[in-house]
Image (cartoon, rainbow, N blue to C red; front, top):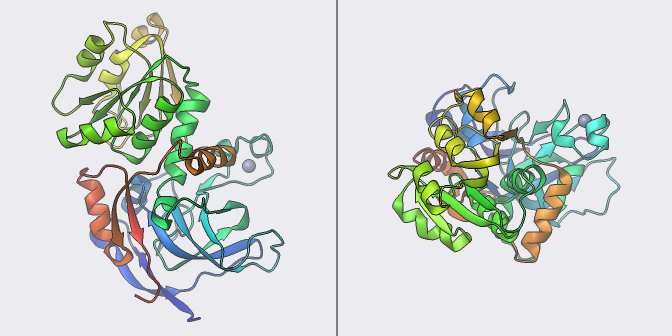
Length: 351
Ligand SMILES: [Zn+2]
């Protein structure tokens, strides 16, 4: 095995042109880590923020992005004594935590003060090889390709934490999933449908409507050309929806709030259009609304969603596949918002 590998790195923060396909040293594998030969790595919006540079994430440069990856075990660390073996197909849980604090010990590791994301605070899967803590390595569900397996972990735990754990969607409730073509949105539509809700979703272009319906959305609204809250009011006879699953931010925030029924709850996990949202506190309390912030999810939730995928109750949605060396084009495709589902990098070793 060579001492170097191909990877897509950036040496300074900035636009997509900062991404460089180059030779870098193979990662060092710690005693409790596993070295994975990467087969596929999905993009997340976090990759863009990390490349641009955001205050909440301190990273060392050069950096390798990529939170969601699948591949084959190349080797295991010297202290590893578990059941995983070289040659086995696996995927990585992107969330890493200390394992010892009260939050970790009670299964709420996404609240751990030391919580980190693979590919964010440490190098990720835009590479031929990546070292991952052994606790974060899981066998690949048998019914999935490497590309499908890379496409689900981060968005599944995020969406399940929002739809099931926080919103606790009940059969017969109505759920509005913002941005149904996004990774989180494409999962949240399926999850709300699985839990027995009437599902509304939004998309930014007309051609995505049919795809959102295929995933289980009962009504799809084009939020770029239609008045969202008025459409929701009309479709619910003025009642509004019980739950909004949100991650777009300021462009749609007002409409999301106005789409909620009395006693409705909004869960947000992102702000891709910006985070300066305003609302009138009087509107919040008089309509008895609840706003919840959500960040990633837990190991438990990854195992649950993994089982739902294995039994075909949920399916990863892959928009497109790019070779590793075209990571820049892949990120530009994401920024153009023309995708539906996950954009995945395919990693072919030695080329
Ligand atoms: Zn912890």
